[in-house]
Image 1 (cartoon, rainbow, N blue to C red):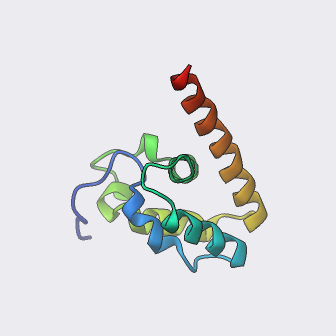
Image 2: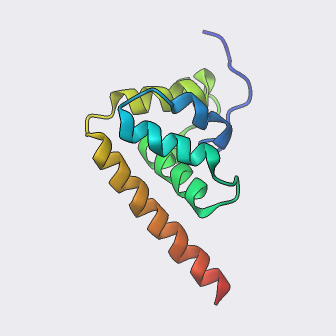
Length: 109
């Protein structure tokens, strides 16, 4: 096994392009939209939040097998193994977006 470098604490946005082509058309549209969005946009934050939840990034430890493999292979495996349809992933993304927008709205008040 080769150590892939320093693991991130949560899913890193630089790994988003690696998720393109992993599923169907709807998934690819979502990934493409994230690639076109601003790095600081609520949409990008929601996508990262969704992947963090799916991949279990919060429980990943620096010395774990997942961390040693790296975030890109881990997230690709999670998306490849996701048993639901692309529509379900889209719903999860929109739920994460709603959470992010609610959080940002609370910061502004």
